[in-house]
Image (cartoon, rainbow, N blue to C red; front, side):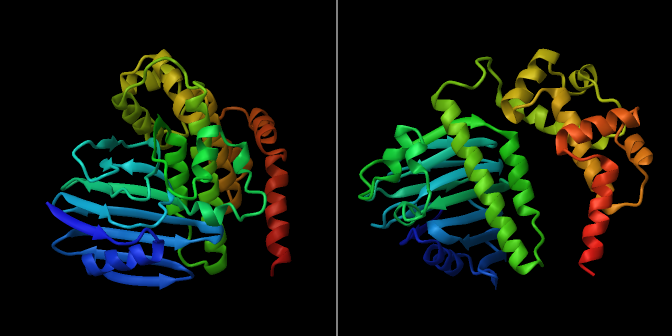
Length: 345
């Protein structure tokens, strides 16, 4: 087992120490640091970027050649960390002990350890890991105007106001594919757009953070649906979203999806409701509409051709649901885009 000991919880200092250990290639641009490596340690990249008011993003897309333990041996006030794993898993303990908590794929997790504790992450060997950490320095964040921390539930209010690091906190919450989708969009932000990239990253990061806070609120208030849904069911539903996208021009029915996944229609509805806050039909319709917007923006296809491409039989019905979703007709939306582009020339 490989062991890395980090002596700071501050993003820039932590990243510098990781760079010394990993010996990869560092690229810095517009406040973003990306460390790429392909050596005896493993392969992949780490990324960090700091925003205002003590909010930072740290994410990784890695595969390690041996089991690796990362220990934070620091007296810093620990950040509050909102963790989401889109691929793989890893173990967490507060005091470098054998009593670990496994953090699972698609599960919303929030942690913060006591100031004197040695936070420990144990990453598995030969496992492809995609992990996002949104880290909040609570002292800086509380200086933010209209931070609205007081409107969170009492558990999180007390955590944000724990300036001495006396409290340990672990929320192993519900599973969400909606958050996974938003993180995918976060990672797909254009890498060559300078200021626009920074603004897009920050906006999407706050959206993900709000979704993680909402999941915690719902979890604590027992608002999740009571029926059980297993990790295997979640993975099947996740695969279904790719199937839906690949068959977007077809009429995708619940019975078709049930046969494709092996899940009952009832389990499908429960799963989509828990993971996407939508019924199956609502999810499929929303996806068709989002794709239609992309066609209207980036192609010269006629509205009738777009309607056919997304598997909707009636142009009038398409215009109706497009207007309900976006408060503009498809033809007007395309006209608006053309006028906007013309004014920029």
